Amino acid sequence: MLLKAPRLIDFDNKRAYFRSRIRQQHDQHLSGPLRISVRRAYILEDSYNQLRMRPSQDLKGRLNVHFQGERGIDAGGLTREWYQLLSRVIFDKGALLFTTVGNNATFQPNPNSVYQTEHLSYFRFVGRVVAKALFDGQLLDVYFTRSFYKHILGVKNDVSEIPDLTFSMDADEEKHILYEKTEVTDYELKPGGRNIRDGGNKA
Image (tube, rainbow, N blue to C red; front, side, top):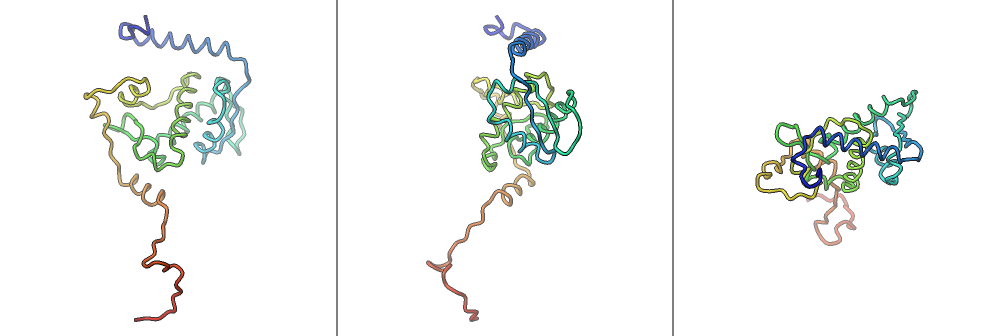
């Protein structure tokens, strides 16, 4: 019934059903913990490099986070902090992965993400992080647009979603693209000009 008529069931019951299925997955998972060691200043890059190629079964293990150069045993607090810090970087406009819509309350993929190296691989990594947070019962203070949720579910967006699909580029983001993501290219003013030595003659 949940799958055939989801609108007839309230959210609390849906959530309870979802959590029960997650508990079943936890009970069936037998492998060891998932350990990662990251630098705070490079939390996105380090997390990406250590998690993006891990098998799906490994991601079901209990996450154990170590911040390099710091003492401390992860009894849950470091993991929560890792989720908070990582999500803050992922959804920062400087990462060029997501952009805000409306009153900066919801996120959707940034069309300018093409300027981010390996952006498709990063999006897949973000999906893994969100899935891991759901699996671990961790709260991410992030809300996606309705149109993006529909896209994830494979549901076609209708005309009413068009305002939800708009985006804009602010000055900082434009500067980031133009000055940090652009390669410098030399152009010859005349054929073979790069091989002509300047004798210092002035007209």
